Each structure stands twice: as C-alpha cells, then as structure tokens.
Length: 184
Image (cartoon, rainbow, N blue to C red):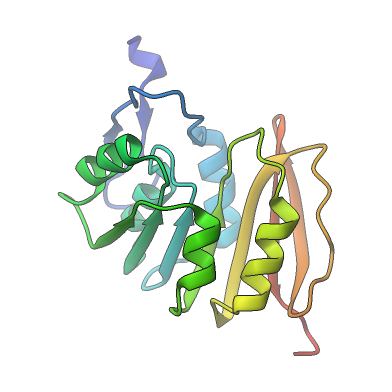
C-alpha cells in the first residue's frame, strides 16, 4: 500500500491514526468526506451514534475520536463485521451488530443523536430506509439522520416526522441531512 493512500482518522483524540484497509471490496468514506461531514455536524461530544452499513467503520472511528460517547455499528457481512470489531473495540465503547440495516432499524428500540447510513452505491432502497427510520422514531429530540448517496438518488424533502434541512455535494457523492420537522 502506498504511504499516501492509507486512510487516517482526520480529527479528535486519535487524529492521524491509521485505519487499516479492508480485505473486502468496500467503499470507505474519504478523508475529505469525513472532514466535511463532521464540520457540518459540529460538536458531537457525548452523543450516541448509529452507524448503518458500517463498511470500514471509519465513520464510527471518526465519531468516537471526536468525543461521541457511544456508537452502535450495523454491518450485515460477517467477515466485514469481524474486521470492524478488530478495528474499533480495542479503542472504545462500541456495539457491533451483524445484520441488515433494515432489520436492525425495524427491531431496535434505542434512540440516537446521529443516525448515519452509508449504503453501497448500488443500493436502491434509500427512500424505504428513510421511511423506516422515520416510522420507528429512533432519534433523540434534537437528533439528525444523515444519508450518504449518489447524486442521481432522489430523496423526499419531508417524511411524517423528518424533514431534509441540508444537502451537500461532495465530489461524486451527496450527503443529505434530516431532522425533526419544525412543526413536531
């Protein structure tokens, strides 16, 4: 691996620490994407994170490095979940679930400050996932739902409880931000 191509945590107490590359074909968040995302999210110290479609675990590592109190990680592929467990657990308070994001959301009863979903690019169920998150009301009162997706993916501006309040194009990707509607 070339020295310049190694992923590193971009902020917080573990800034500069390497994130081991996966042996599996996953698309980790780039450093630019993580830096932009956390600049928009602001101070996350003490918050509880739900990381859906965790992949490399880079979002969780970045969040914990920046002071998040706890992260729940969901990855359906057992081999990738084992890699995440090896990357994250030695350093922090994280809980890893090996199941589909949809199944986890449908059965979980906890509340999170930030719900982050980074499905694979060929995932076609963004709207259904958002509707399920909206229906299950898994966020804290001031919580946010953040979805990383392709530019051509169309997402609703409003759901039953959530509304999109920001959308950022970063490179070839988009990050859409949702929170509780103002009239809730």
